[in-house]
Image (cartoon, helix red, strand yellow):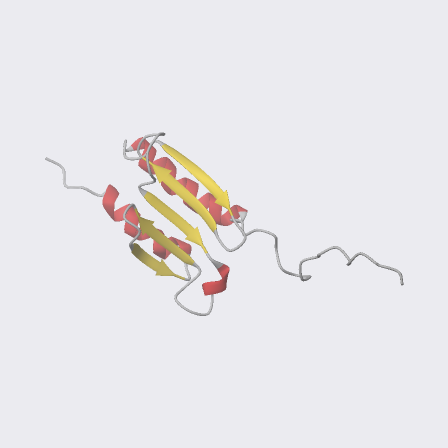
Length: 115
């Protein structure tokens, strides 16, 4: 009797190892980030590329919890939408299929009345 080792595990073909933002998506997100930094609202950001989601986290200061998270979850493509903006407390502020439309919730916070 011969003992053979099992073949190495290979993920299913066509499935990505991690979800990422493409160049156009990052351009839109970093454009908003630049405007918010110029307004003094945001100071730092972090990127996380996971198996099921890509996350762009925004911070007021470097050593605290993110103020907002912009998430891309492709598995929700047919449901609520692939993009979401999540607040510090974990509430979903906006979800949708169009990144620009979802990010408008954050641009409204940039518009303030002038005294």
